[in-house]
Image 1 (cartoon, one colour):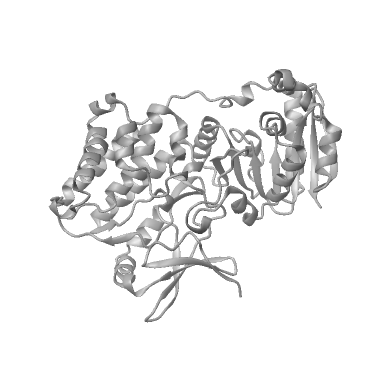
Image 2 (tube, one colour):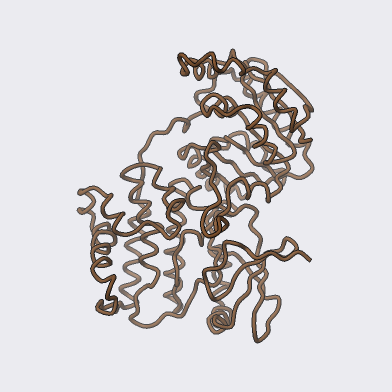
Length: 456
């Protein structure tokens, strides 16, 4: 029997998560028994399950010392710094929906960490079963400050300064400090009643009373809390970010004809159909155009791309078409999410999560020239990376005659000669250390080649 405690689950004294023979389970400790029994017997948990707000669990055993739950397994846990703006918004709105539902049933969220949310089956879902507590009359929302630090702050900063602020929690696992958020925002933000009240004034009072919290009057009626939540919900719902990114309309910029484009689609579909299990990671998948061609085949596909607008377009399609099998994520392959947090294991790296998911295939279209020429990554290094992703790799290689390759080479100016190694012979030689070539097919009508590799 293989039992392993989840290294991300240790901060809450109420319990923790572990895996047993690839099954996700949760220990509930006696300190949380009263809350758990009330949440269960009242039907509150079942209501959240039905709404798809909370990941489902089943009670499998109970004793005087612990309750053990079996939870639905999520194939690929994802983090706030891997979401597009709309995904981040929807995660924030879900947290507010849950808190409102809590208050209406005399419960409350005791924490509002963005890490309590992950995306699963096309939508955000709350994954911390033990984050609920009893509501006490006239008590404030204890997780309010955390909500501002994890959700409202990064979202508002993004609307003013761009997508980089969506990655704030990768450097601040506890959330951005209120003082920092307030100082970074421009003076014009003071004219927003929501920002003024929930960020600037909150930061001011938080700093003033930090040393003597007992001096603050914290009484707040339930009706006032509900108004606060509704105000935050409406404000976040209408937030927008206007930032043009490089690849947000990539497939309107293709440098080959329609027949080559269709041929490429057909080759991708045939390759995917040959795989035993239908799990795939699409590296540099942009808006998911090619991955979307593979749906309806019991597929599970993670589509990772560096461009947040492209990922957002993908996510909108997921919502529109109700595509439960596609997970769009913002990931820069040149700087993938690292292991961070306590013991460097609290939040796992993108590579480690991908490896443990055991994807059957990896799709890498129109990405190797960017990795090699924009990122200065040798072929041997990228081959090692792709070998970690999956045992089967379909990768597109634009030759030196490709117009995008020519553009990238010309951008090197006087160092262009340093990249004479960029050709299909050197590419094949480096990748043969990790893969064998199953098939090599030119995409007629283009200056590109599709390689079907199998990991050695």
